Image (cartoon, each protein chain N blue to C red):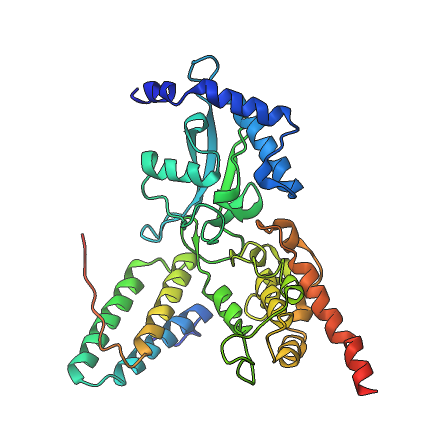
Length: 306
Length: 87
């Protein structure tokens, strides 16, 4: 009851003007200039959020059902199940992580999940929402109240509790790629390994990986061989270090990743990884480029040998 | 001990138990060793009585937990382990 006066103070008139002006100008968000996918998503989110906002001061309660996977190791004899929670999405933040926080704060404090930055940069809150692997802090809740939203942990991973999974294998595979700069000589000026802007551009689309494990846990090839196949995330990082101009162990890295059929060549170009990446990266293309680099030597190198 | 063939899961549990006892042997003092052995053996015996043999999910969960704890215990800095019972 204390909430209603607060909403009046937060000037709804100003909010309505802001919303309508952004929607009338083709949903143009100046801050998202150049990212069409993000602009479309923001426009849709705003439209769906409008439907659940106040109508002339009346607080419209819209309860949406959320089915969340639960399993408690302290109660070993209960099997995992989907628990239903009904949340009023009009009084909750727009993202799935906000809903989870609300449930944990108000209804069930025992709900366990990982979260940290709430802005899609740490990769902690990765989970399977409505069948897709994403980070919960970047996924807007679907305000359609007729269908429940199903939240489960990342598929084919060992569950520690509720939505928390065991990612030690994932991190070990990332470590096996040796994701650090390897050089033979110290830097030319004695301080930094310099890099031209063009060489730095080659790393765009590779360095942004937040290691959320969404791609790796969406890959069927990884499901069937988690111990052997490094997974799209580790291979993307391997390609990031192969294409870094400052790194001097390029040949060795490429050879290590393509030497047997258990590393790069386990990839069957299923492309689930690219479809599910919450940051919009393309691990499948990176793996394809590594396969190409292995089968066809660099043209520059060929001329040098001749 | 059973003369019947042990299942894969039973072998894993026994190898984990052996691993703990071997880790205990590498510790410096005898009382540290004894403490580790008693804690580990009580834990394993308690679970063997309480946990249903067919509850594979929980047994696998305990095995993973045990392996992580064993990796921690193997490091030379770790001296002993203890367990607290909270009701």
